[in-house]
Image 1: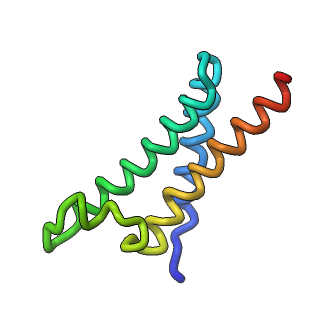
Image 2: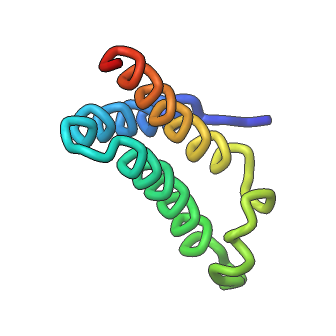
Image 3: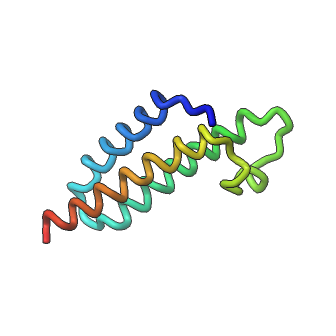
Length: 93
């Protein structure tokens, strides 16, 4: 498995920054789902644009077809967003 951790950490930091800004707004669960969906869409778009065979959205929508780097760049920020939500809920309860 060959993963560029610098990109993964940059994605995690961006996710953390997005959550810090968006959690000031109401509807924390919706905001978290939006952040997770954003990262999925971001990585999906990268797979589609980098595909020399132009297989399209339906082919690349399957997460299992992504490479290890792409999976890590989606899962890590998504986990950060969910973790921030859990911490936020615990603190505010």
